[in-house]
Length: 615
Image (cartoon, rainbow, N blue to C red):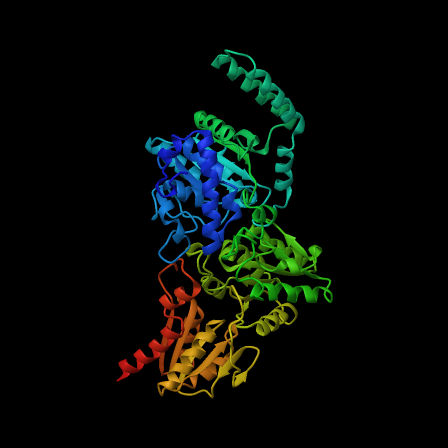
């Protein structure tokens, strides 16, 4: 057995095919064991073990720079580049990131957490090498789902006609997060299934290998002949039309073939696309049979494949079931997703009511506006961190024409172990700048249903409903409630204000403060854009206001409430705590809220410190 704690690219280069095949099995065991405990992206990483080993066998990282699209398939890369000894810290506070992170290692060239960015980064790196006369190739690994994104096409179109030593490895597993959709998926299927060519190629290879003493020159002729025959049977590929030399398809789990093809690509010193076929979830039957379910998941039981925290309703599942219930009464209702059918709970809907556009959030937003203009009632279900990719489309194509598109914003707020690239902390600020947009932030399932109903059937224009990852927190009944806000208490001198599930933290802090002899009430805003006039008046009646926000301070609800209070002549004390000047790093949600001072401990301490300052 190899010592996984001591692996390096140099060691990989010295191993035989048989040794690397055995190593691949050991790495898969480590991946399954670690992700079963820590959670993370399993199926995508199991699928690229041999590909990663072949890359480090052929290329000299970090002189040769390897870029991972999205980055959720870089676990083997981390193990191979000297981080195997810390792999048990994956996605933990202070531990290894689940995505490439340059501050972790010189082998992580560029941070990534969203799709379709790798070709742009890689071409920029390749151009920089040429301009500065630096050695080395640049390789990017992009999936068949990510390559369907518009940004990837822009980069392919730009880079293909260059002369840069750029190698694009297309990791084709017929999946994005859910199964790949659209014309590109069908096109890649045709490339995989050029049966005439591959039958001929197999016979031709056997014939060549049976002839002793073939020189290098004759072999190059044979390779050229095979290329011409491939073009005859398959026609020019779209990648060749863009200027890339197309190599493949190749079995992504055959180390011999991978090594040969990657070496050939490296020797060409030009834009090359290497088409590699892999099996998402390879080596773990549960992940192979359910690659979408095992794409990103919490801890699970290795023997049964069951999620340890599974079975309980979540905001995502309640959202999906609510839409499914309404489909029977509303024939215009349609749900749109960017390759996240399961992640956003839309599997509960009839299949004909869900439109998956692939990994293309920008297109999803404008497409939804088109559905509205055509007379349908679209709901775009998207994670908060992915919604920001479509900001221009939300502004120009949804808000400007006042399109009645409902944005169902999942994973709003702190999301935990996925870290900086996935935190849902920006949507409130950027949506707050857009005219005509209304935004609701429910804190429980009943509010979620009510907010969705209001957005779909009582709002004339763009509307957003944002809700967190996970389940419903326990809550007490308010003293006063409207569809737009809730008040816990009678409106005393000290008021704690927030929105969303942070309400639970403020209610716990209120209980602790009362035990300390300090009276405080809690105001939960449900409608956070525009701010309810009545709620502002309620707040203005107090003398001391503490606002706590699970989002960015700049442009957030707390700043907008402060401005509204000043306009009303509020002369009391106003304190705001939100996320400011930082990206929130990976940790559990509970740890992140504690570090930000937004849990019950932090809220209680903020009020007590203010009292101490006043005295």
